[in-house]
Image (cartoon, rainbow over all chains, first blue to last red; front, side, top):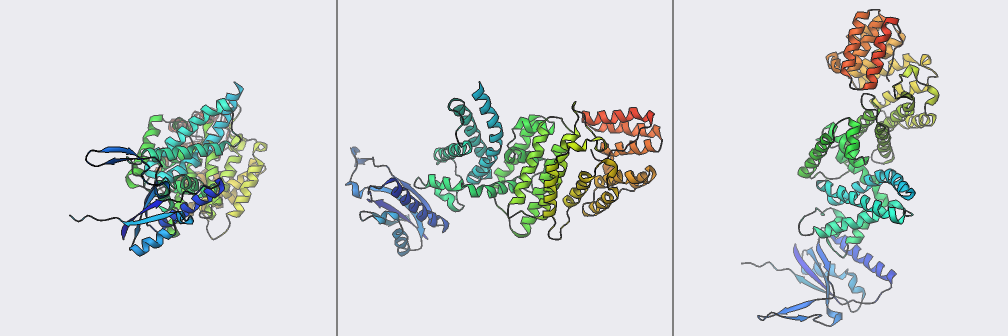
Length: 113
Length: 434
């Protein structure tokens, strides 16, 4: 089993309160299923605010750093046996109910010293 | 202030029962090792309710209000301690409490109405864990499952608050060290653990019923709470065993008589003198219903037999009409199912109603392990009664005096002193169980 990081981008589509509630319910379901399978490690949403600190001069600049539709809105870490499995898991993510939704799947590296 | 008064009255009643639910749910969330956190959340919720309700009035659905505030406080606790305390959220959906995506809904799901019954049952199993002493089990039950405060428990036990705090501390320490899981066991284990929960409820009820201690009204509350806990067992599919129904019947029969046991000026009234019209017919009826529900399977437990004996007393139109032969038969059976010198002693009391004092004395002397009774005031009380009947007043006096020394209850002392005074007048009239 390896750990995979999912970065959620985009998918910021305006929803009615009911739609929004139903949508959150599916996030809950998706993460809950991962939890039951023992594959859920953690997940947090991120605020839209942010700043960047850059380079040796440590210059601080305001975010957002990308266009809104590609901004990272949250992350999830889960366990999977392979990239294929991780990709399969990511397909269940409710952010993909929107065309603008993106899940970036990255394997968390083990640094061998 | 009228509003304040009604808030306080409602709060007393409501808080006790809602807080037991909240503690059970919160302990499910935070684990038994964090029982104190659960208690703190409940405490803060109740304080907030009192503060807000006094000004804004009681909300339409007070219990929903309490639950909502407690949920929010629980979420605050998790958020605040995210990096300092590692709560064990590895069980099932609890893991979703670690993510901001899901924490609110996960919390909501854990508080679902339909889960509460089992949450309370799990809490009962934890409180009655076999590694916890009976005394500490009862204390914790009173605290977490009956919603009593430490001073109230101290009053019920006639002991200091300090003693109660220590007992609670020890049990919590045990939970902390062993991280006891809140589970409903299965198979043989379920049977054993249900037995021990029943036994604790039985002891709890006795604590309330027993005249040996204080006359504080809290004792009636203890009896009522024991009944509620036992009722939960009879309603939960996991614990609907014949013994649970039998214990419930026993509690109903005894509770039905509780009002007639104390006179207007607070003195104990013994069975022969009790005003039977004061017995609660509805409770007796309820007891009958539980009794018939207890009659399945091939289990005859001590609760069945004690309930059957209590039933005979409840059914007799007056003391004289009591079917003592039947009662003696039940006692014989009881002594086989649950051999104990106290049961034997009670049997002798029944025997004395139909046989002469000499036979009673022989029976009493043939009790096995009767040394165990030598610290029990009723043993001497009975010896005193027997010797009174045998016209051996010298001995009777001696035994009654011993009994008076052994009981801590002023009420019991009063009754025994009265007997002592009556000796000269040769007044008999034996007392069965009070």
